[in-house]
Image (cartoon, rainbow, N blue to C red; front, side, top):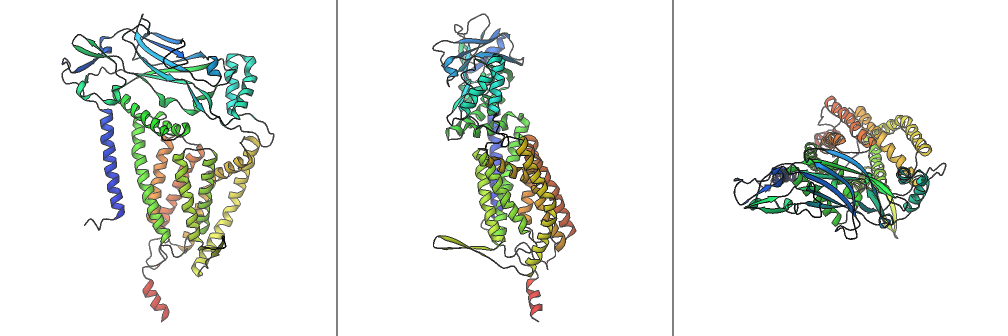
Length: 555
């Protein structure tokens, strides 16, 4: 019985177990067992239940232990943990910080009227206000040669806030720094603070390990009492919010945001921050980690749960589509009914997208799958055009296979469709490239070329799916298409539609998700219009009625 189980069924079974295990782990993260008897000695009660008067104080220092002095930048008197607020303060930067140094924020929650440095019942955390990153390469207008990077604009705006006369000098210094390949200090413009508002009573025997490091307790009679659970949200520190620090940045703005959270959300956020930190320990860059941060920060908790499940199904369908697609092309004997131009275009567009992602220094999470997909598409082109490679003296020799009568007829329909398509496609692509050359800025001519090609792929790439529709129409059949792999890819197309609303992405990529839906619906209409005929060639280049037909031909 087990030996007859298909590989696909085995993969689906493993996937179901993975989803169930993930649900169980998530439940264990967000649920904490409370103390059954609040008056018991084994319970840890909240200090907030006594409704004390609290104050929030924030200091800056060059060292996390505040050695060498500290400066008060903000204090919130009569601090109410249930009241959400946002404050913008200007922070003076020490000379060491301006000279590619660091700066820390010390956040204290303490009793009102008592200095946090003398309050025995204060709780505090240390957050880094600076981080090191390699500046973005400057972008220039390829026509006029004008050089004005985004970092320069931000530097000029920052310096204008401080002192109007330093605006131009700040931009120049930033531009000079941006030319370096060495990491420079960047300012984190946001500081997000959270406190658990739940008056939760912990059981000592079931105290979660993730909460334990944030828990500060003291003895009050026979009871153990824990101080407010203070948390600094590091996931909200995005790369797009960073501002490069230069020698003229005397002071910079800092947005301080506060909001109360539940205990379950705190535990979930701790685990997510630990996961991102672990990735950085394994060699992921700040930009790689930022891609993952965006999933958590830009969506609420319910959309985040939906994202996890959608991503899991996307991974399953991706694997099944990959498996069936490889199987289809591995056993492919004939290109009858298949648009070779569409196969060539998919190969070209996949390579262009890979080069674009590489040029933009995209996260490895996206770059590696794109590279693997490019290799597979090159292999498909080799199969479609029946290319054989022979090596003689270290030099490759390419031999193209011959087409039979049915394949030549398919090639004629394919060429005719591409002829009509070129009247629309080429002017649009050339016009878009010229517009970008005149009005936009790029790092180099290569960058402009790759961006123009990838914009053409995203905006008009779906038009290259139309020749296959034309070939289907001429043959009045869809039996030659890899329907298993096609259906898995179609499911992923609709899943991409969900991601288009959940995840932040370029507008061109978002539109590309919806344009595929239209083509897929036309494919479905053609499948209904042209029922499967067993005398026609199927996706493996053979027909169910091949043997009887062969005998009739001999007679």
